[in-house]
Amino acid sequence: MARPRPSWSDPAAFSIGNGCDTLAMPVLEPNPTDGRKKLLLVFAAIIGIVVLISIIATIAQSMG
Image (tube, rainbow, N blue to C red; front, side, top):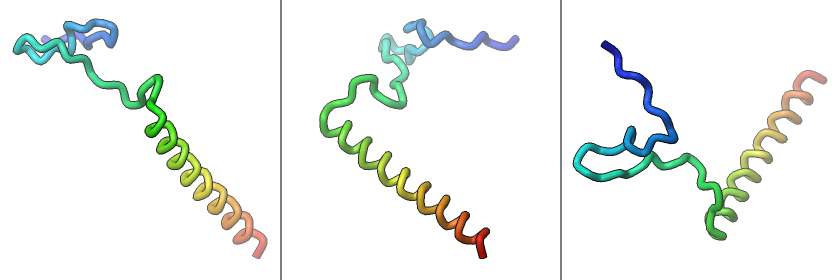
């Protein structure tokens, strides 16, 4: 019989089994520290620049 999926709001669903009640870590922190916030902004700027260059290159290629 298949086990039901655990609920994210149920802390017992993510316990390791040895008495440790560690929850699953979120992918992004809701309130990052100052250094991590700056790093996230740098990564977002790099990805934005790459996307902008690829859009401009696609338009230029279609123009001939």
